[in-house]
Image (cartoon, rainbow, N blue to C red; front, side, top):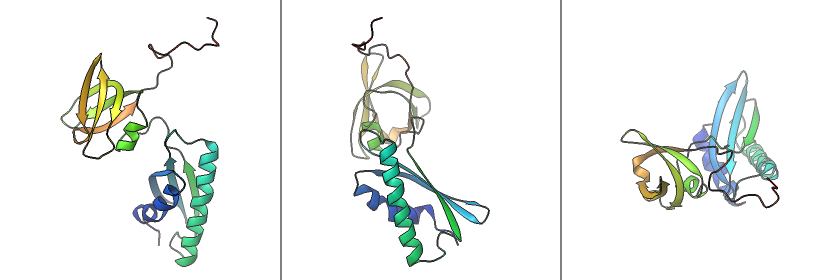
Length: 168
């Protein structure tokens, strides 16, 4: 028997929240006789390698305790993978939008089509909205009108301040 991702989310989210981290996703898959548990974590300001290592230890300890209380729940054995979501993950929750204020984002709309602009403001409430600068004008998009947003990787931002250590 293998535990569901929903059950693990219920167990892991509060444990990670106590450290200031957010549980972004949990996936459970079978790999032969083993279960593979993939956990994505993030926090305000981003999560570095030390933060991922801390989260990994915490998740591992929590899963070991769960396995002791309910033997076999995770299968005969499991592999744990803990990582950050990465820049290519879709923005779907209000906290994702807030964490990307200032970034260039392409938004897929429920009504069809896309909009690309820089996030300038993001409400915390799920029924709120994100405000974007689209070609110099503010555009407010209700979260309900958005399927997802994707951060665009910018290697050289046009309006970025020059690096003071750059002698170019």
